[in-house]
Image 1 (tube, rainbow, N blue to C red):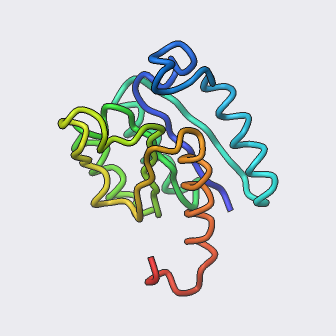
Image 2: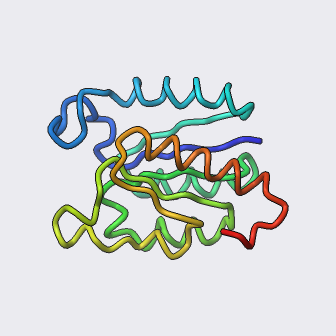
Length: 150
């Protein structure tokens, strides 16, 4: 089982950007923790980050033939990108949307996600644990014979 973790715009700034909201963990630190978790789960993991919407769309498209599921934190593109939404819909892979902060406790424009309706679920507000919960959720989803329970 292979899971693709996609990080979008500004996620490369973790550890420097708004530490009061995101903490001091860098993207590299986050990825190391997810790779460690992937060994525990017995899955293959690929990580990807881009600040460019088109590159994220291309990565989602390429996942159609290389991954079993996606965990995505599109950053601000969550609230603006119909293109990323359409790419997720087009590849038809189980996708979990994750956010380190609780997007519903932030500015009102962050309360709407274009991605949520095409994802199997959304997890926000738990820092790095949002990723871990999302990763576990897609693994459980893929392992569950009755996917209708989600």
